[in-house]
Image 1 (tube, one colour):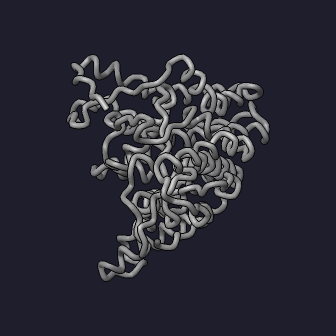
Image 2 (cartoon, helix red, strand yellow; image 1 turned 90 degrees about the vertical axis):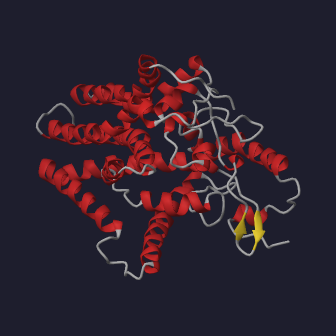
Image 3 (spheres, helix red, strand yellow; image 1 turned 180 degrees about the vertical axis):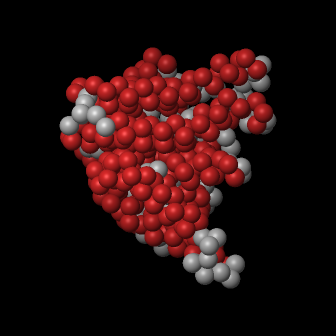
Length: 380
C-alpha cells in the first residue's frame, strides 16, 4: 500500500467533491414526485445502476491517502456526512407533504416513490450513519442515531458496534452470511437475530455496571423515542397513509442495508482455534472492491477490510488492499447486491471465489461443513 502525498487546501476540496455525488439523488426524488410515471424509475435505477455504469469508465482507485492525515484536512469529506441527516429528513417529510397536498400521483405511484427513496436512505443514509456512529464526537453519533431512527433501524448501531465488529466472520455474528445461504434466507434471519442480539448486548453491558436493562442510560430508550417521534410526524402530515409511506421507505432502506451486509462477508470465516476462540480479524475476512464510482457513492465502504482493521478511521483515509491480502469482488457493491437477489446467479459468481479463498488461506482445513452450517467447528 502506497500513500499519496498531502494535498493543498483547494485540491482537498476538489478531491472531496466526487463523494458529494449522492446529492444528485435528491433532485431526482423531487422530479419523481412532481411528474410520476416513468420518472419514478429514476431513483432505483440511479442508485443501483448509475454508479456501476460510472465504474466502467472511472475504473479502479487503488491509491491510499496518508492514514495520519489530521481531521482538519478532512473537513470537506466530513461535511457531506454531517449535512445528510437534515437533507434526508427534509426530503422524506417534504415529499410526504407534497404528495398529500397534490393530485400528481396515485396511490401506487406514491408507494413506488417512497420505496425508491428508501433505497436512497438505505444506500446513502444508513451508510453515512455507519461512518458517523464510529466517531467519538457526540454530534456525529447523534446524527447517526437520527438517520437510523428515520428508517426505524436504530438498533443497528448497537448490533454493529458491539456484535458485528467483535464476531465478524464467525457463527456468533448474525450478519455474516454463511456459505450457500441465499439472500432470501439471510434477510428474515438477520431481521430477527440482529434486534435480539443488539438488545441483549446492551443489557449485558449494563449488567456488568450493576444496572438493569430499563435504566435510562440504555440507548434503546433513545432509539424508541426517536423512532416514535418520526412516526408521529408522518401521522401528522399524512395520517395513516403517511405512516404507511414512511414504513415503506424504512423497509426498503433496511432491505438495501442487509443486501450490502450480505455481500460484505459472504462465506468468509475466521479460523476456529478451539474453546470458542477465533483468530484475529484479518483483511482476508471481508470482500473488497476498488471500483472508484461506487466508492464515491458508498464513501469507501468497499475498502471494508481496512474498516474492520481501524473501525474509527474516517472514510477518506481507509486503505485499499490488493488481492494478495484480501479477497476482491468482480464488481462494486451496487451491482453485486443486484446479483445477490438471484441465488442461482449469486452462487455461480461467488461460490467458486469462496472455494478459491479457502484453498488460498486455509489449505489445512479439510472439513468446512461446520462453517457452512454456522456452527463452531470442533477443536482439533
